[in-house]
Structure formats: structure tokens, C-alpha cells
Image: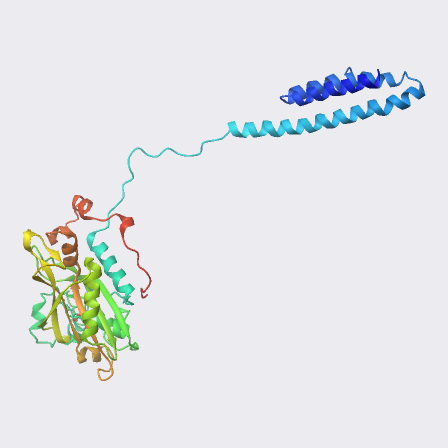
Length: 375
Ligand code: DAH
């Protein structure tokens, strides 16, 4: 075979290699070129019959061809294997997803009272207040005496109280009639029941705290239920005054009712734990049968407040010659009724799922609490 023919054979095999589609094609090319009866093997066999001079020339050419084709076949084989693997991976995948249940996922609702407590907490947190809680079952001392209710004072009758049976020491605990006892707990940092009526370490003012929670009175009609909710507020510092109180309350009412300007009216009132005491009315519009807060010419009573009575500061372990402050108490259920147009308070506590579906809030709509929470 001439050099030219060898060149042709090489081109032929290279074309075949290039055109090979799969591993079987390439195997076939290997057999037909490098196999026992292959075209290149046939050329190699001829070398033995050549004269030494002829072999010197033809040997390197044919061996070179063998090496080149072997390398090209290996290379092509690698490429084809990679391609085949890629194609198999594309076809052979397992669907690990599960079909969704046909039925929509049932999500609960946030009760309007919880929603409003969250809203109140978020607004006061933004103003730098922390949040504290006290127990529903309270001592007579913290619910009344420490708050400057004299033992025979008719103010005690203002609250129709649920008393618990007396304990072995003859003490009658009660269901707290308001959140005001938490003021004393906050001032004295009373956390444990055992420490309820003696001074633990008094805390250093400034105190800025709100105290939401359940309260109880023997009462029931369209606007009263035996259990209801209040939020108490307390600010004590060396120079906090009524101007601050008014600013805090107006700021809160504007944020809560989402109005730019709200008119308030402070009327003199009486609470044993504040002096002076006031009731606050907000501007509202009762025309057209509805109730719109923050506009119109009518007034709606919304909360009680005042400057903390010196006796209360004293019972909280603070010197009224040094410290002064203000407090307020707001009915949470009432705020919820006003903001969300709910007419009958009793429905709040009927646990009727249809009512909750209508008046409740979706879990993801609630405002988050941005810091400011006390432990
Ligand atoms: N504790 C009062 C009540 O239940 C509400 C109240 C009035 C709370 C005036 C206060 C306050 O802190 O200063 O009727």
C-alpha cells in the first residue's frame, strides 16, 4: 500500500469516527480498523513481509496511524459516554413532589381582641413603652388597698367583685376587677405570688409600661360581660405631667383609629388611685346611624386616667416627693367594637366559629411587635 492509500484509509476512518452516533458505532469502527481482521491490522501484518528498507519507511507511518486512530476512538468514546449519561439523566428523573390535597387548607382566625391587643402593643412599643402582665387571680390588697381604696370606701362597691373562697389564712382572693393592680406589680417588680404584698427591690423610674389583660366584674348586658379586657398604662418619672399624658393618649388614639387629628375632651372624674382623675371623650360622628371616630360634633367616653396618687406611688415603693407620673385604663373590647364596627360585646365570647370567620383576622395580617417588650 502506498503512502497515499494509507492517508486515504486514515481519512476514511476519521470520517467514520466523526459520524459515529453511539457507543455501538464506535465499537464497530474499532473492530473494523483495529480488530484482528481490521483494516489497520491488515496493514500491520504486511510489515512482516516487507524488506528492512521498506519496513523502515512504512513502519512509522502505519504504527502512527494505529496510535492516532486508537486515540481518536478513545476520545470519541469518552464524548459519547458523557452524552449518553446526560440524556439518561434527562429522561430518568423521579417526581418526588406530592399532589396537594383537593380541599383548601383551613386557616384559623385571630380573634378581634387578640388583634387589638397586638395593635395597641405595637403602637405603645413604638413610643418606648414595655409590656407587663399580672395574674387574673389577685389579692384584695393589690386590687384595692394598695390602689388607695379605703377598706370601707364605697368605691369598692363600684366594682361588683367575684371573690374566691377564703384560704387557710382566711384571705379572700378575687378575680381582678381592673388591670390597675399591675401598676403596683410593675413599680415593685412583683413577679411571684409569694412576694405579692411586701416590697421587693423598688425599681428605678423612669417607668413606661402598658399592661393588657383579662378583668372580671359581676355584670352582663349588651355592652358588659363578666369577663372583659383592659389595658393599663403607667408612666412614672421625676417630671411627667398632664401635658405628657394628653400627648401620649392623643398619639395613641390617632394611630389606633388611623386618623390624622383627633379632638379629645378631658372631664374631671374620680378614681381612688389618681389625683386629679379624668375621663377622656373622643370626637365622633353619630349621624347616619353609624359611629365614626375622629370627625363630627359628638363625644364618646373612651377611657379613664389621671396623675398617680401619692399613696399609690408610696405603696409602689416610690417616694412621691421625688417621683410623679400618670396612669390610664382603656377597655380593649370597646376599642375593638368601635374600630371594627361590632355591635354586641357578648358575641365576642360566645366562641361561635361563624362569628369568628366573619370578624376574625387572617394570621398574616397582624402587625408584628417591634421590640420594646419587657420580659
Ligand atoms: N381602673 C379603672 C377602671 O377599671 C380605669 C382606670 C382609670 C385606670 C384611671 C387608670 C386610671 O389607670 O388612671 O375603671
